[in-house]
Amino acid sequence: MRIVLAMTGASGSIYGIRLAEALSKEALFLIVSNAAKKVIDYECKEEFDVIKDKVKLYSEDDIEAGIASSSFNVDAMIICPCSMKTLAAVSIGYADNLITRCADVMIKERKKLILVPREMPFSAIHLENMLKLSRIGVTVMPTCPAWYHKPKDLDDIVKFVVGKILDQLKIKNNLYKRWEGV
Image 1 (cartoon, rainbow, N blue to C red):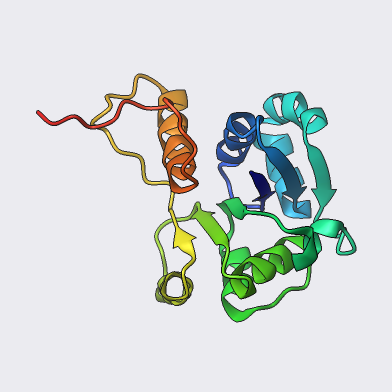
Image 2: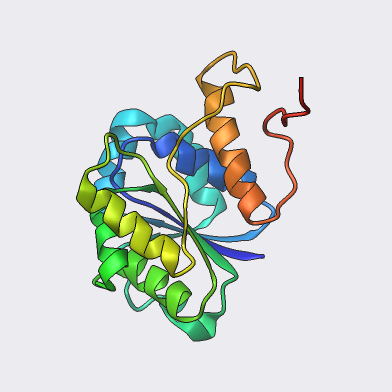
């Protein structure tokens, strides 16, 4: 599977990093926004340094990259974490950088696009943008972990969210304990 993963300037970069690790067996193209670089440096630089040389890495300014074209033919795109700025740009088709251009291509080609917003509380504008995108087939997955798997630490919570994203791509994983009933 050929997947574009974009990380934007929302807090929660560890979600994108763990997702990149989980997708290491796929053809992965990673875009990191300028704001994400700052957040990564603050939140989890060491973890990012481990993955950055293992993937094809792009800047949001690399608008001429092959992945910006529908002829490049990727299967899916995930924006994780997704800032509300990026979510808003995607919702109105404002394709001014590589991240929003790739998302625009996924929408027009009717391919799998997953946005993982990391913000709270949601304003009415945020909710309207999410609803608009959901209505056209975009999957919106805020980082809302469950507790039935009895997480022991923050890594268990991150694994749950990453596992649910992989489930959307139909990529088998055992990152979290699935509900089996009481």
